[in-house]
Length: 362
Image (cartoon, rainbow, N blue to C red; front, side, top):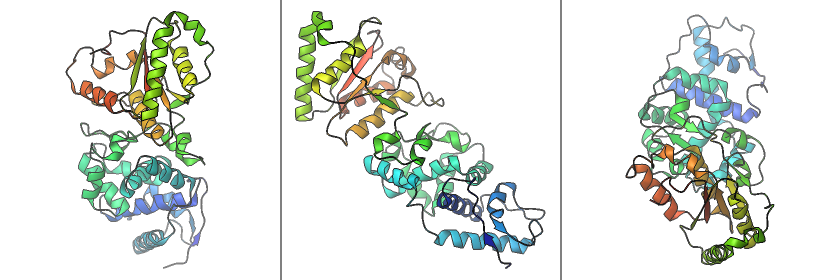
């Protein structure tokens, strides 16, 4: 085989090791036979960035035998190369995996879905396979890429798996679509894991905000002092005894200070409060999935459970309850899902609504 010289292209992926792992997965998918290779005329266009990393005397004029040998050698080289363990992305994904107690396979699947978004060669290769992905096809292709049996991938992507229950990935089993919409990663997550992060909570800053200090004081709510005292004492006891399923509902017309009161309560308790982002970050919500703000809430619950304390403020809940069908189908599956969420949350939550007739009391 003709000699070749490595020329890393920094414009492909920020980290050369991430570039290599993306190409390794790409070539493993090709080796599986899921995409036919046609070398009669030229290199497949989506492989050109890989080819252009090397200098040859015959660029574009290589024989078919050379092309197959080149890709086989690349597959061997990439398979024996160092892993992505030293990259910021890998370090951040390990923190995420530890926080959500993910298995090594679940972490690798999350890694695959993340690099798919930033590696053009891998993305274009995967997208060539089909525009109507089934669950089984997802399991097969990820299995080929990671060199893991399909059954293990299928098990890690079950609805009951920690990876799926965490909300980090969403598997739309009810639809056949392109890969990116079949297996959805949170918008913002890919950007969050690519840069250095000191702690896991920093990765998910796009989902929530640390509550700001209240601009009102408790004496502004003197007319509700007795009720507020009860809430504070109740939350103090719940925090002391680490009770689960602790929820407070504040409701009233807009502008009466519900959010300020929630912030004041956290200040009185000397517990950090986190507010779930008020806008949906994921435009791909499906009818069979909870809205994005509830996914944010679940992730935040997981993260705070790793800390000594924390309180979650969920404002404008009436904006998401209709999408769960709680107004017109009180016995549907989403109501059971909500009930379970309210009964098992590890961190106390304050829910805020401008209206109380949105299924909150049902």
